[in-house]
Length: 430
Image (cartoon, rainbow, N blue to C red):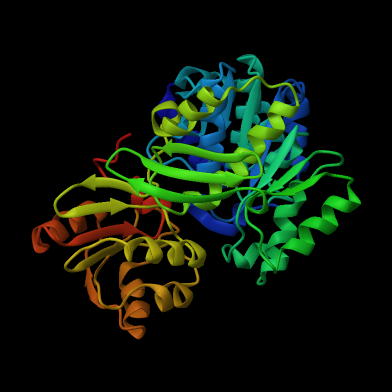
């Protein structure tokens, strides 16, 4: 089976959340457990770090993987969804899984697929574990797909767990309040396994501490130990200062967006705990890992600059908490007029989004070419209720072209609303 045929088989036969939504999400780990047992439980053959959260888990996962790779460890990285190519989901030392391996794996487990009818995500998770085991990774950084408690990745027994900031997203599946959502994320906390919370939030703290206490899991609130702020940023790097009881640390990261200040404390605490567990990670290796996240892991779409004049930036922001951080970032930029290219998927809190998005911008409403895409006309109609006015241009690349033609060199163009909108940008490159 060639790679394209394999992907077609996976996309068409297996229920996929990114395409059909919550009907593909199962509140049950049975299929993943069964698949892993069929494969000899590969997830038990390597060390893992498990990461959940509403915002920041992807950036945090890539930072940790970059640091471990810089320290000389053979490092697996599992993330989702992919932006350009399926193979982005599974990496070892920053290199995508081989296409032939994907084909061979699907051929090998077709009997199990026929017997248990797993979802796309369940199969992909089992694939990642099998690949990491065969590659004999020293440690794998595993990002939760959705929630935590019933996420397919939650069959691992990690050496450390990390939970990033909690916000309102997927409320139809995870709960309508922050404590309810935090309860689902807290499902990754394991007995006696240290858990790091990146950001202290009054609504969620008790959920995490109660769960950790029941499981005798040491718990650390990273932002109470480390204070991080951005000093300077240019085209390539952000300089930041981190203060803690141990002193002051000056660092750089090639990840854009000041919201990384919310992620860095959790990342640093994970590294400190790894050091206490005899992982050999020098300060120089820490520096290099943070400075070269994009280079080492291929992360795309986090406050990523596409063009200089007019300044054109894309970001995978897609929920209310992310939008609030996005607005904070925009307010720190000098520009003449603001242009926003926006697309969404069904099920998002549009009223919440557009109550924060600026109504002094000109909008270009687009839609991704997936079944879950929200029709651009519907997006425009909701936005109009909040005074966010603009025009419908279905394809994001056409919207970028029109916006850049309309804008002056002093204007600012922001592209966001969905991973799938960002994924369809033609010149999105690392």
